[in-house]
Length: 143
Image: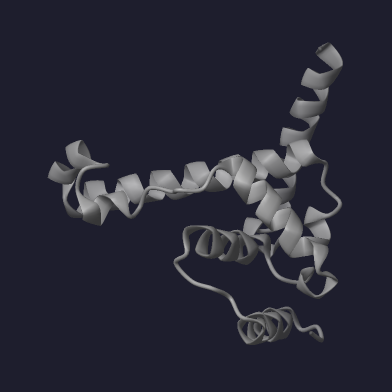
């Protein structure tokens, strides 16, 4: 048990320090595939928490009276994430199984998984080719 706790603490420390040295949005599939599952889970939990906190802050700033109707008001309920961290983990793992996606940022990959899982948008191969090209161009590498 103590060994597992140490592993978690080490993992959290590495992620936190790495995100300070290199912007979180710069992590891509090449980083993802090198991470242990526990680190991947911590990243996704942080992503979900950050998204929910951002949505809460936006509602608070624009219409604070709607905070009490968080899940009742359809305009606000759309902000609630309908995908579990476990589903995100499976989806992002599957996304990076395609070696062509390894240069796509984790931030983008999670967004794609959410879009696909909720039915909000289907990402066609053309969409993915365009995204690979854009992200490679932004990094100064070839797609």
